[in-house]
Length: 288
Image 1: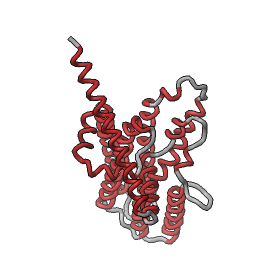
Image 2 (image 1 turned 90 degrees about the horizontal axis):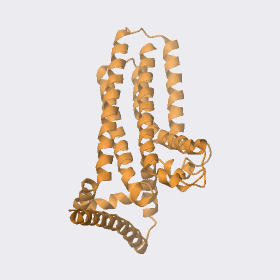
Image 3 (image 1 turned 120 degrees about the vertical axis):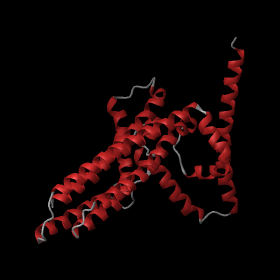
């Protein structure tokens, strides 16, 4: 039972660590858009609620990532397997999926600065403009800052999660294997069932007929605070699912209109980038 509790401690620690780093990205976005709050009398508690609602939506993403490792650890604990390779594999799984989620959050910072909305399914149409997209990413200072932020927080996550991994494996190895007893096994089964149910509820996000939606982040009259509470990864996931469902109902004209609007959005970003670079060249040329 002790080894199972050590394994749960590892999973919960990774979950909390992911939520903390998601909040760090939201804090950067808050500081970047602080000008939208200037001139308005908004209380500290109203501003903090955006972070609370953002944590709510971030938890949905974290539960999506945690559900599979939780099920695997629960099954392996019931059969008495606590090998190092199991937790090394889970560490790799967490690292891959959280790094992808962090990449979305980092890319969302300059994207939000341009469009005042979060990344959605329309970005998949940008893959047809690979060269121009890379030029935008590495030719604009804000994108470079977001890329460096992504590298730093991703490295921090992998580093800390590796420390948690070594600590968990060390503590598990210190506990000698126990003979089968039905009471500890029953407690393990009940605890695992409860935690899996809690994780599934976290994925659903709320009680009621419908699961949580992006609109759950809206709570006040300030548009920026409402947008701040949205999780970029959750928004991309939801918009992709909705696009795949609605795509089956689109006729040819609707598809053309959707593609045209997304193409215009991309070219709008490219035009702003070119204008910004031209302005920098002109200001540099006028300096003695």
